[in-house]
Length: 203
Image (cartoon, rainbow, N blue to C red; front, side, top):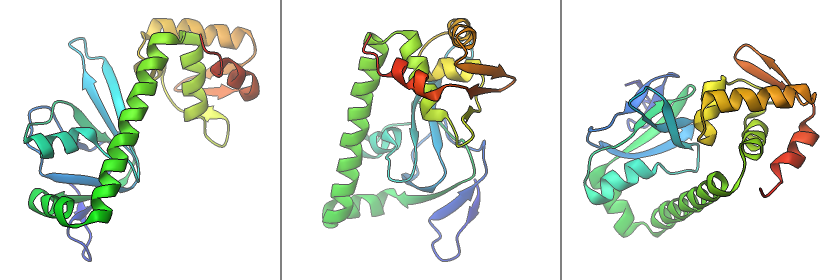
């Protein structure tokens, strides 16, 4: 999968784009992200990706946690979005730590609770917020220091649970209002403060 760390054989360095797990595979151990970001997603029959969540340092992969606790196979795919460094704690060691290490157990359960809280927020956002509001929020979340979002319209659609055509129309509406500039593979936010006002709308 990747290069190991000589000081800690459980730590692996993985290149961007590497698939960490696929549906139907058995979980090899508890995945702890030290640096970088892992995308966990489903792929529809038409090839469209549906992003479930991302795992960054301090987060937990619910897929891995569920596989370990319930002894089941993966049902989604996990892929490195950039170069990452992860630690894979084998199942026996994970079980031992959960039982004997209070600090580790509290950290894991706290991360699980935070992840479920995020899912509640996500469901509420998709159910109660317009495409305009959801798109504004994701643009702000993905914006870098140069006020640029490096993402295709298809990627943005998968982020907010919509179709690429709908995202395209909404981006063009933003562009007409002078809020963004649409470029190939990226979007420049011309008025982040105005986009932030849209993102704060409740419906």
